Image: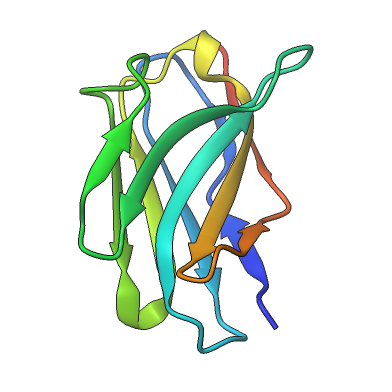
Length: 116
């Protein structure tokens, strides 16, 4: 049974950094694509970054050059290093994982607030 658990959110000042982690420690599924999405108040959920099992990455234009996604396949873990954070990065960040069979899973979300 898949359970994605996120950690690492919090309050940070503009220009600061945070590192989000997401792990599935309960299953032995090998995920195809893992990623991060975010949803700000009053807005739709949007893609932040994704990474395939082979290491290919994709980023939203708004985070390119500031955020870095990485993963450890053996641990079913994905990370999001966020640097140069801006107030507009404030949102609930969700981890996602897609299997090779087309199943999709989501974490419960972690709040990131960028404010002085």
